[in-house]
Image (cartoon, rainbow, N blue to C red; front, side):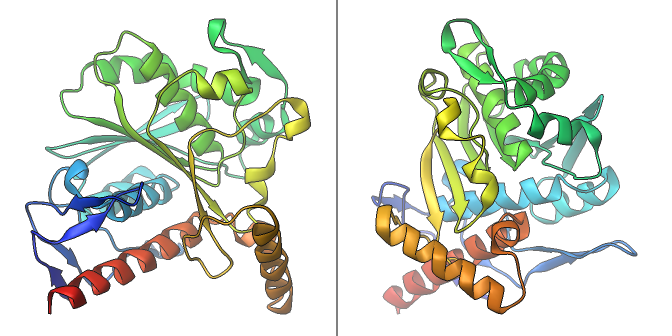
Amino acid sequence: MFTIDKNVSSTGPDGSSLPMSNKSEVAVAPKIIQDAGEAPLVLHSDVRGPLGSLSFLRRALAMAELAMIAYNDEAEAQRAAAAIGFPVARLLDRDGSQAYQFSNEHDVVLACRGTEPTEWNDLQADANAVMSVVGAFGNVHSGFNREVDDLWPTLEDWIRGQRQPVWFCGHSLGAAMATICAYRCKASSIASDPQELHTFGSPRVGCRRYVRHAELTHFRWVHNNDVVTRVPPIWMGYRHSGKEKYLDRYGRIRPLKGVLRSRDRWRGLIGGLLKWQIDLLADHSIGQYAKHIATAVRKEEAKLLGSRV
């Protein structure tokens, strides 16, 4: 275990220096939550104050782990969320569309639940690539939009009642849903604007006009060959939104574009095949996103600690 002094600076998403939390950020041994017969949840976050006071990577890690926790049943999700600093966890389920409300004394986080291959509603939403019109804001994927429609009346009432800052996150289909929810929150008369939106392995959600209409602080995480981030196709008019944070084949955060990214993806694909893995699917795992961001946190904090010695 090691501790970072409260006055050490960290790096923001734009590369600028940011102050650390007034409370020290502590890297602890991972917490493991496991029910009988279930795969273990390995968690590294330790949120002790407002999310806004944490370093960018610490916030991203908390968002990734909450998106991962959202795949679990309510009892396990409550235990896991409490272990990383969110003692309140409530599941919303309307006709198979699901989201968790996580909260503590400082913040509330809406984590939309991602794709479960065994659930028909999720498969329908993923397969339905027809755009629908959303007022003056352009077109959005009708399947994703319909999933949010099922939850929105309840979500809107809940968001309106919040006094703490509201954050959004999600993985896969949950990432698309979280994006639409954050956009609706921003465009509505709700007093609380979204603080940040973090999406992991998100498909494209809507047309160019739609993804540009809301000025959101959105970080869109993409892991190497994650195939879900490449659909629906651009030729159908779909575009991505937000500031991309790319994880290369080794899980490092790197701003690779063009030929360099293509080379990285090919090498990642070949490396996966040599391990008997289908890289296009393995890279979509929310566990992989969380693991790589946790590694980035450890490296950043070790570097900061070393600079103070």
